[in-house]
Length: 487
Ligand SMILES: *Cc1c(COP(=O)(O)O)cnc(C)c1O
Image 1: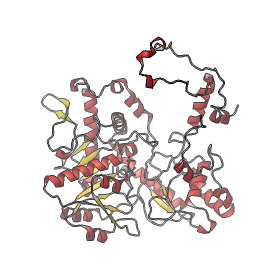
Image 2: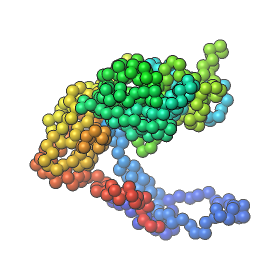
Image 3: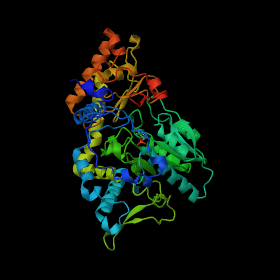
Image 4: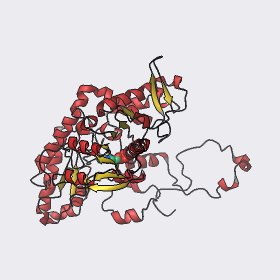
């Protein structure tokens, strides 16, 4: 029997009356009157009727069709798909944490509150901020929360004319989206040829109607914004605040802190930098940090340490606070994984994360820059962008390269983002990959460039080895077929 049989034919192998389970006796059979009539079905659902081995093989085979960090190299730029140590999962699943109810009285969850509070103070130290809330559920949610803090700050000062947020043209799409959801108008600032923000363009857009400037540093092309002290000075002089999109914090770990660069508010993606599995929609966590003077605006609830009797409690009564932006205290298991990651590495190893992420990215970039077009040369941080193949005459596009990589068991890099280049191919290897993995990736990328020259059809028709070969992307988005058949 081959894998395909169990992959595809689960409905086709259905045999009427065949069972792989036995359910307890239906206690409602004699009491159907107890159930509302509209909840009763007249016919049994059309489910496949199969034996237990068939269904077990079906799902096990399906699970191996999925690609993840545990199955292969995943250089998806901007996403920091680093390896997630399994010890983090064990900590998060420990019954002492996993069996808690969020509404338990504070005195019965002192350990959990201490874990929350400890992570808050670790992140404050790492970000150079005065205080963090762990409540937001994702990076974008953190952006919205941070912008709401900025809004509350300006309102508090009676500064109601500030209705704009400035966002660089290289920013992640969530930046303008969050600013928009927060009620701000978006003003775009241009990037220079080296990918950094055009300071003159920014200066010309600053006035007393600007609430904040959102920046990502290193930015989405992997370049460090060297003018950040000057930018922060200009922005503060105009009365606006500096927002740091910390989804790219990984290369800064152990190297530099947003608070020291002049940022007032920031978020961190725990599900990127702090080693929590992500992709497929979560769960994530986007803690928000603020500099001294902005703490009062952070959302409720907060975890407070009471020195007098050395205990923790959950507070919801800060008068200036935003109120709730999430239920309870955020995604607690994600917070635990981040805490376990920080504690298991320790300060010294954590300070090696950034430099190694940078080294790995530069190693790949310099090894491939003859074959691929490198629009922004020079040392990058954690990621960099190729603008497709150096030789464009073959007709092979970034999409073809991404698909061909799948044949070799690599996840594709981020493609067609950032929008600064036509054929963007954005590569972020992260620090957790071995030299051998990087070398194998480089070898395959070189082979693809060679194929593009010599046998372009092989690349143009890729992938050849994946379970699904040539989906029609447009059709799949417009008319998704999520059922095996019209049952
Ligand atoms: C991933 C990312 C975000 C958004 O984070 P989510 O958790 O996906 O909402 C924002 N900015 C940058 C630069 C990112 O890479």
